[in-house]
Image (tube, rainbow, N blue to C red; front, side, top):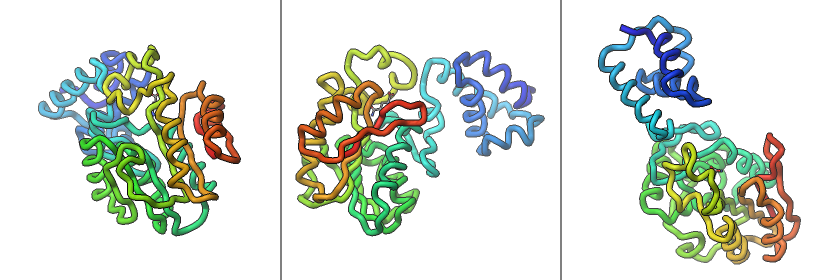
Length: 273
Ligand code: GLN
């Protein structure tokens, strides 16, 4: 029988992707119901026949490109473990920038915030975890994603987040928010990146937008005016080449104090106004 240590080395060759070691460790830890660090504290552990075959099956699916988060059914975001399935975008570390900036812009308590296109609920729950006094609406148009967000809300126990069905603002009751955030679809349909890696297994509706990827951002910026307090903030994530266009959209829609923020790699991935 093979030890975990041997499995890790062998599996990296099998998977052959850049993140192979991490992928293999996450999958092994998932099967064993352990933390990833446990693999290092007990490298001589021998997999049972059942564990070995479960592991081999997951490796096979990973080799076919399925995202690790779909294989384990979960993904870490901020300090939270979220359930994930193919009905939504898999939360990405990039989006933690939006959470950080939102918390810096809005230090106050008791604030009313809206997360549009919440997916798993990642942004809404990250904000809720830092700000238990906030009232947060998490809106989502996909019924399947909505059910997932609600399941995450219950598991994490956030009573200050309300998960609502709405296609952007369409089904929201009239109300004012001090903060509106969104990680909307913003990829151009012709982007070759769509046929590579994890995005192949994510819903197009969560990724692709018309007009070079800017259509949904523009719709949100224009309609948010009716839902924002006068001194409220709108924050959207976008692609690394879209900052100038998004600033143009915000400015044309009448926002003040429009600026983009850089991520840790130096790309402008977020615009606020
Ligand atoms: N940043 C993601 C990607 O490039 C896309 C996220 C989105 O469209 N909101 O894979």
